Image 1: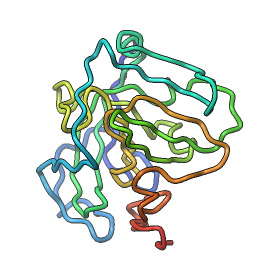
Image 2: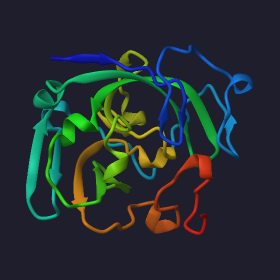
Image 3: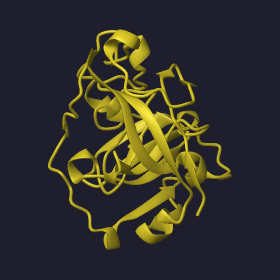
Image 4: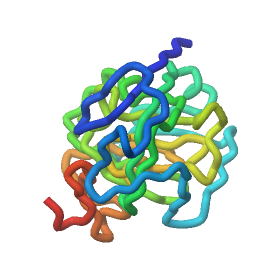
Amino acid sequence: MRHTIRTVGEILMGNISRGFMGRRTASDVKLPPGQYLTTDFPVLSAGPTPHIALEKWQFTIDDGTNVLRRWDWKSFRELPAENITVDLHCVTRWSKLGTRWEGVSLDAILGQLETDAQYAMVRSYGDYTTNLPIADLRNNQAWIAFRFEDEDLAPEHGGPARLVVPHLYLWKSAKWVRGISLMKEDRPGFWEGLGYHMYGNPWREQRYSDDE
């Protein structure tokens, strides 16, 4: 199994700085507007925390009608894994720098999948959903992570596996993922249907639906 170490020092509008930069503070990093720095990892969820046994875990990609790809936990863990270090920005205004994850790039998961779909609905155990452009899931911008800070990902943070899309607000990094539905047209997920922004770029402070 190929294993890649990728360090993401700072995410700025999709730009990735490589090379380990160590722990940084608010004094040496520019935070998105309206954010404050925390060293905690607050737990914010829309509902109860699902507890998914690994032998029952599945991840599928479908086109809304047909399942195109399917992994169980064993076959998922056989995919090439990467170590990444990224900054997180929550719409509730906290930012956490230099978080270390291990996971599988969406480039490996989507592979050479041929589709004319431009959007994806990420689906979670517990029925949470969030929508993203497929372009934001490719090109080393998104991962399905299963370890955090050298430990298996805890259920309260989305374990056994969660999406990590560090260039968007953290609600787009869905916890407890179980699949992706490909869509030709965009439609809102859970929080987007309740008034959050359809895209959620923290550097443009796209918190709510009427933000530019």
